[in-house]
Length: 438
Ligand code: PLP
Image (cartoon, rainbow, N blue to C red; front, side, top):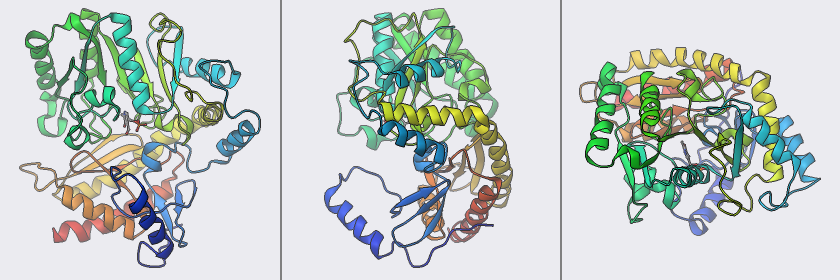
């Protein structure tokens, strides 16, 4: 069984040089939980410049769907880079982009038979497009989003983001007309979680904003940065119902949960409440910057010039997305489901062993464990979480946090059962040392 190899205390000398340069010249706004310097990647493995080998359960924050440098993706990138790198798909035509739009439309992402796709470069841009399209089409101003939601950091989407106050502090005034309702919290509220959240939403419609002034409800089918929170199955259906009653567009932000990560192409397909619009990015091109907004054709009839992006749908990124889709449709989505179940089965005993792990949650390869101070208060314990991430890093396992106190597993979809087992073995070892001491 292949295991991580750590030769020397981290960060090693070469890594330290890279970190020192970064500390001097790179924006201080980046979040680095521990000092990993990545030099090379292959599958679920990352190599640093000092010869250490790490098992990666982050996939570059749920981006490298097909693993680091999948040979088919690399070949597609190389081939396209030798033909055409850029020509601006907003001004000219190239078939690698239009074919990708057709393929994405055929995935059944949204309601209706005929779809159009708007291409951009990132998750925040995909959600900006959602907000603009919804406002344009409905001529309404209101946007409803959810506490704990994360939709990006540019000013429009930041107005909908309500994940951590550090994202918003100092940047006001944000977009007017954005209202936040609570997201269901099954860990605290169990079977009542949906009803409680919907009661607030309905109160909002009765007291704060008339539903016929709302352009869109923007929601993650599974909250990502907010902590991998899965709402009860009825929740999205209840949102759908309210949207249909009041002529509101239902927009799913599947930037993190989309394209196979949860064991289905889209996370909403686990429950079956169809959206009008879907935002995608992260995993769509296995690491090349690409975002997309998909909507049924009659919604996306805004005039030329009303929205566009110089780099959006760049040919090389589109080629990487084609290769990614080939792999996803060729069995990777099912693989994510099976390895995800395996990973969940391995993580469950950790939750049984430690009272301070409140639950294991998520779907497919979008799994998290909530670290709490105690089971009675369920108060998140970000310090213990940080010690766990650091302890794993020191043993060659890369993990990330999400929400106030959770540890997330979002590996590449190519992860093997064996790699998942090694990851949990190391994780369990670290839990024993950190949670026993805390
Ligand atoms: N939406 C969701 C659900 C996300 O998880 C993220 C990023 O984590 C974004 C939007 C923003 O994406 P980006 O960082 O590419 O702008």
